[in-house]
Length: 173
Image (cartoon, rainbow, N blue to C red; front, side):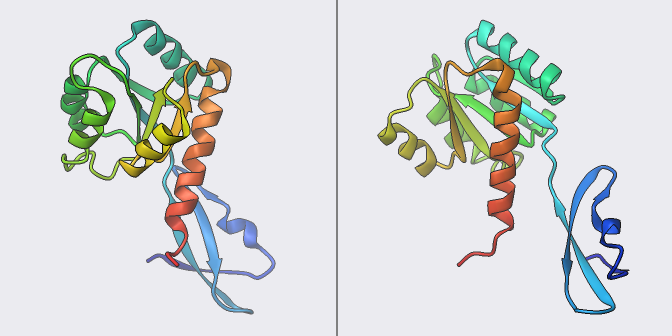
């Protein structure tokens, strides 16, 4: 764990360090020792979607509006090969795809060392309460309904990422 001293009147020193978000935890009242916790940034997104038109809309929304690096795959099998080369921070996954559907793809991704712990968000038109519960039970952190708003997609993903990271940093009860 990294520690550094900070003056009680100059807490702005803790705000940001280039390349990684930082949060400071103040551990004493006067001459404070601060533990710095890294907050992972979302930079790389793998989107698995068989519809090429939806792929293109999402790519434009996430690269241009969100400034994310995007890799696109048209099938679950293609994604299983791509994930070890691209190393995404987040995976967006369609549910209904020919051949290997999203649920099977998620199960296979969880068996690979390169993606076992990578958060997955389903992007689907199947958004009944029981379906959403099933997706979460299988390990998805969230569900984005299709059709999505391309102008809000990047911000929606940033918000769900922030919620996910905040939940991962919270101590277990």
